Image 1 (spheres, helix red, strand yellow):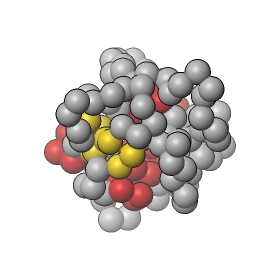
Image 2 (tube, rainbow, N blue to C red):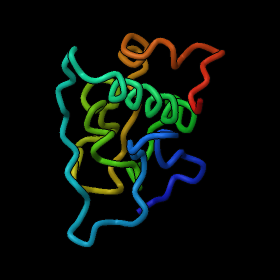
Image 3 (cartoon, rainbow, N blue to C red):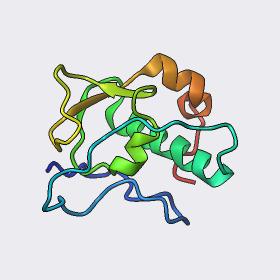
Image 4 (spheres, rainbow, N blue to C red):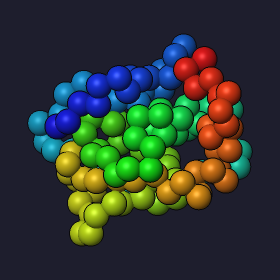
Length: 121
């Protein structure tokens, strides 16, 4: 499992996790898109926004390996702002390649792409 050095491990001041420390002995948690409803808590929406900022800052438009990125947090963006970068896509692999769908991400999280965005604050 690839560890993404420099990637934030969590949203500061919260319990929202962005990375995992070690691989699961039973295998990677399967990735599956989760529906985001309009009535989600502010804290959940903020965690999604900061996670997207971290992805954009670390990887930009380039494909990236799932590695130690938290499956639970990825699932909230999967299929919309984060898409498979390979076919066939294995949702149970730590080596699976993903990529930011920049057009959708800019619509969903416009603040992240502004020059003065303070993602770590």
